[in-house]
Each structure stands twice: as C-alpha cells, then as structure tokens.
Image (tube, rainbow, N blue to C red; front, side, top):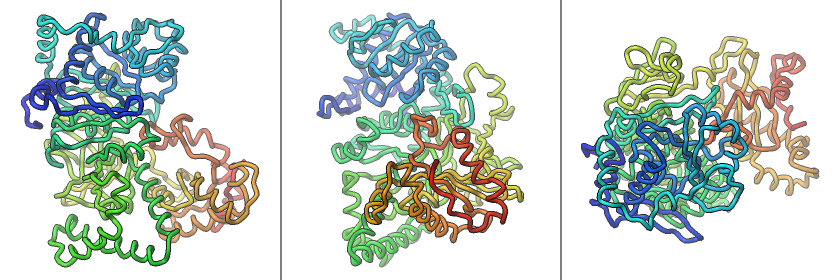
Length: 619
C-alpha cells in the first residue's frame, strides 16, 4: 500500500475502506471496554465530519484547531478537516491557555475541537483573546457555561442522517482534488528555544516520509497492532505511529493515558509502538534494580545472558555475520531471561521506533539484547519528521542511522547537519524571515544540530548547536551524553548539566523517589518532607558517591564537579519539559538560577572545583 499512487493519506483511507473494510482501524477504551472502528466505519465518519465542517462554513485552506488527547475523535477530526480541504492544527493537550490563545490568533482559526470540559475551560479563560473563534466541537458531552457555542462531535457527524449521494459526491470530489503540494497541517514547535513557530507540512511531505520510512523498515502487515500513547500533536507519533500503520491497513489502539501505558500494553498486546527515551530509561532502570534485589544466582544468570545477548546482537546485526554457535547460547539466554521480560510488554512486540530525544547507547543495546529491536532515528518537526533511521540491515549503536530514501544529508563547516529531501517543510507559517533563515536558496534545511557522518553514511548527533557548553577553558562539551550516563544510575531520575563559560561542569539532579524512600527506610533517615530528605547529609553523601562513580568513566573535562539535588522531577506542567519529555534548558535555567549560580560561586571555584562534590540538597 505504500506504493499507492494516492497523493494524500485521506485518499489512501478511501481505498482502504474497500480493501480492509471490516478490519479494525482504530481501537479505544470506552467505559472500561476496548472497542473498535473498522476501516469502513472510520472512513464513513471522516466523510460525515467533512460534511458537518462544510455546513459550518469551512472552506479550503481554513485552519482548524484540535486540542485533545489521543482518541478516535482526534483521528476523525483530523481527517475530516483534511477531507473538507481544511488544515488541521494540533495543539498539545498540556498547553497553557496563553499558548493556546497564541496559536488560535496566529492561525486565525474559527473552529476548535476539544476533548473534554477541562480543555473547553482553557478556551473560556482566554475568551477575550480569541474573538475569531465561532464554534467549538467537543468529543464529550458536558453541561457548562456556554460562553462559546459548543456542539458535540456526534452532532457534527449527524450520524442519524446518512449521507446523500450528492453530499458524498461533493466531499469525495474534494478528496480526489488534494495534491501533494497542498498544505496538510501546521504543527507548532514545542518551543525549547523560544516562541513556537508554525511548521507548514504538505501532504507530499508527510506521505513521502511515511512511505520512505516503510521502505527502510519493511511494509507493515495489516494484522499489526500499534499502541499509540505519545501525543498525536507531535509529528513523530503522527507519522510513524498513525499515518504509517493506517496507510498499510494496520490497527491503531489509543492508550488511555501516559500513566496507563503499561496496563494498556498488557491488555492490547501491541506488535509495534513509537516511544521516547524517557520511557525506556525507566524500564531499563526498573529491570536492573529488580534483578539486583534478587538472589545471587539470578544476578549471575542475568549478567551471563546479557553478555551472550550483546555478542549475538553485534555479530548478527552490526557485523552482519552468521552467529554460529552463539545462536544456541542466545536461545538458552532467551528462554531463561529475555522471554520473561518481553512478556511484560505483552509478548508480541516486534519492534519499537524511538525518537524525540537522544537514546542512550547502553539502553538501545539492551532493548535489542532482550529481543525488542528498538530503531533509533533522527528528525525534526520541519522534516515530517524522519531524516535518518537504523534498520535491521543497517544498524550502528551510538548513531541515529542512515538517511531515508530520497534524502540528502551533509555537514556545514561548523558541523551543523544539513538536510534536503521531499520531507522538508514548506516553511514557517506567516514567518518568511524565519523560513529563509532555516532553509537556504539550494533547499538545504539547517537543523541546528551538530553531527558527524561516517564513511558508511551513519549519522551521529553530537548535540544541539545552541546547547553545546563552552567552558572557560575553551572546551566544547555536549551535555546530553553526560546526562544520559547520570540517568542510568538507579538513584537519579533526571539530570541537567550546566557550565557554559564556567571553569567546570555542574549538574541539577532529581532523585528516583521510589529508590530514595526505600533507602531512607533502610537507613532510618528522619525527615519532614522530600525537600528535607534530599537535603540530609546521608542523601548528599550518597549522591556524591554515585556521581564520583560516573565521573570515573568520563574524561576529566567532562566530569561533574558540583551538583544540587532537587526535591522533584522536571515536568511538562511546570513548563520544564516539552510534551515529548525533552528538557527546556532555558526555562529550567531561569527557574533554578540561584541554585546554579551557587554551584559556580567564587567560594566553590577556589580550588578549581576539584573533589567538592558534596553540595547536594535543596533550600
């Protein structure tokens, strides 16, 4: 199906409504029970949504906001807007009202889809800032102060009124007219470096990216089941976990929430998922901690199995050599250890696609070793998103893979990665100056990432161009590999390394509260609250020792000389993380400026910062 001549995904769904008519397209949990829409039912709702939107006054090119968690209504609204020749603009459900108001004003949207009363109230709180909004469509029925006209999705679809032949002919005529160069969506960047920009992606951008990704990984079979839990507002989930399976006739199940992913995995037993490194970091840490709390024999078997698995994976997938006798040893390791781990993921998971942030090499190798190949790739919102990808045929740990078909990559003189291909955006909405700065006259997108490309075409991302730390001694240091090393420690949940224009590096650390509270109970540490606990001498000394152990494996100029332990994780709600859990360094730096300045005070620099680690705790 990826070779279909169709120029848009909604055109492919029209074909799939016949080809996979009774096959489940979307699954979701309603009142505690999993239910599904077949491809025929899904397409009918898309056409009905387009009819309702046309009656509401939507015209080709009009922007429509979707403010919702992942659910069937999101998909119906998305493709319904496209079928009406409109432009869906997804907004993260965690967005603040002011952020929502900015996007509504910037796009000039007149219609907003919302999932719940909570999202509707965001609109109400900024009502005076969005006078252009004429109608709200809710996925759930609720009674509230209707300061804005609210219709339910059910009312918009008018399910009790079947489509007439004339209505169907008009809408399917609109669908047939969609061209690859037409604007599909405007996706606002998560704003790690400033005011969000509206990335304009065409039907050709997003469809070519899904097709070229499938060309590298192989066609998705209709019987595959994707569990979708990352926000569909993010281009990675939208392309890899939504567009790609749907154009192949596979099934997409929407997780209830991020908090219920583990429960939903056990229920639907997915065969594929898209994920971000943060989830895998937690899984890795929990598995290792569980093993190390077990009997000595269990630990020995586990580490023997890991050693065998590492040899097997490198022989078969990295070096591309027949595994020989390793195959027998790996099968034994799999029976003793790895199969039991995979059962926690439902037992059917064939592979994961990981993006959104750099994945630690050790964790990536671990996932392959336990029999869940995890394909790390690289991309941007501006590239729909995929630029490079590791595959079964071309795998290198520590790299983000090779370029997709039809995609060119190279580095500029300063090491910045440049990309050219069919997935590169049309530009930034209503911002020609930013567009000209990002895409040069020859069509090369300047990514803002520092990279290396080896002789085999594998790309390794060093760091963000603007996030490189340049110390007072002139060393250029990428913070993310150091942060990844810190996060692998069982007591450290998150880490932010800082030290720009300073003589040494320091870090803000957040504790793994589950492990820390267990320790406090074992050591009988008395404390009033978590802030008091992380400030205690015992915890400060513990973290100092953990950081010293990590420093032993780093070159001297990359070691952490000072640290502070914060009482809670960085989070999306406080604006410290993007919706895909990347650090918003600027915001964190401003919020904890006094703590960071204290780490680099003249007193702490007096002896070049050596062995002055115990400055943990909080105020």
